Image (tube, rainbow, N blue to C red):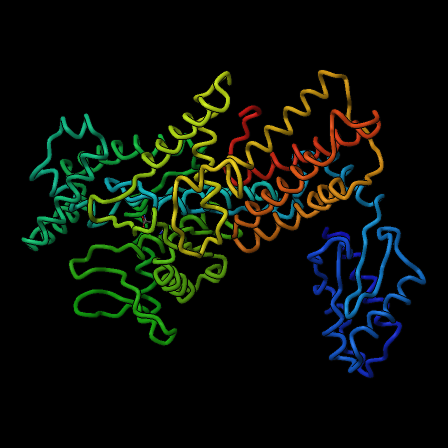
Length: 575
Ligand code: ARG
């Protein structure tokens, strides 16, 4: 609809300039152009211009302004619109049927690229997401970073950016020291080989329980980490093994989501890249000693100090992030580097982004933190340090099993049931998660995610499969899509919704907000299903109508497929 908005805005600006003398040449009539709205009731029009702001500027009643604008514009209208009418304080624009016809042509012409502006050509975006801490559970709290991060990568790629997805593994820090202590004290190699990450998590939980009683264990953990930093062979071997064991687990979930990364350089990768950056901080006089630790004071910027080195000289999470950012700038020359984490880390990012700026790197402006809210299941908060967490693999497994049960009942003859159940089961969770504004805390229930009705993944995938079966039937019956005039309001509503796709992609990109696309998918499915129920497609009265409706169905199939892929969803053709 962006093009129609631009055309309408141009007509309005031109008319305003010609009718009124603001007595001030600096008044920018273009400022009214962003005020165009979609009327809630499309029988009024496709676009509406509220005249209230203009009314205040001109000290004239809104209905009078709307009427004058209508008269002026209608004297020389644009063929994109079939009518331009003043109603109360609004000027309503109706898009001409022929213009809708052009949207279908555009969808056909651009195919999988429809909705992309290609503005990212020649620019690189680095995305740092998922990034679990090794030997710790990969749980529902990681769902956000993993799917929002990947979705932002797909959207940027769609817009033409070159994207580098980085899994910044938490593989360096005192927690690794804790894991080493726990294994050396209570670990059983065979058990870990057999049970994988679950056994490591058990050890980690035990460490915390024991450390409550005997805090000296924490000192022991720091000492083991220090040995790791000094390349002690035994600790290095253990640590590498913990990474392998952990990764086996993550891979299952990444495969189900269809996610791979371009780099798995975790925190350890930067262990030898911090010293030169610490040196710069020192040279610039940024480092201060605070009880033996080295910090950057950020009081002036309203933030607590950023910790760079601990008293024992070991590095910290922000130190590694700073070294990583410099390395990424040098390696990829990014246009932006995007970090997706829970909002609990917002201060951490604000702090070290500031430090990077103080170090003299002006590209700190291109570092973006994308935070998201907490996730709970059925209302219960998730804790990491206790054994009481919902693992992603369990959540996915349960969802897939339930879908499988539903399928046995609804469509027992379906081929490749396992594949479809996985696509729908995992997709249901992804969709449910990405439907919400990312910053809002959310509570999750499997029942609501798995419903085949309402704003759910299964509903969207089912609608997609419906378009596939119509297209298949049309092919079998030798009906090919063809132009034809759109008359039913349901037909027009589908095309109107198709026209909105590019701006929803753009909103998702600029707001780093995938829910723009998820919600769009529901709008498109709703419009399509209304059309499907009210306008017979393959049983239409005449061949021309049949061909035109098949054409609409094909366009929906194409755009819905693109949109679902952009939010990491698979698109089975039969469900
Ligand atoms: N490993 C961290 C965690 O689980 C997230 C890392 C995010 N990325 C970063 N560059 N700090 O909390």
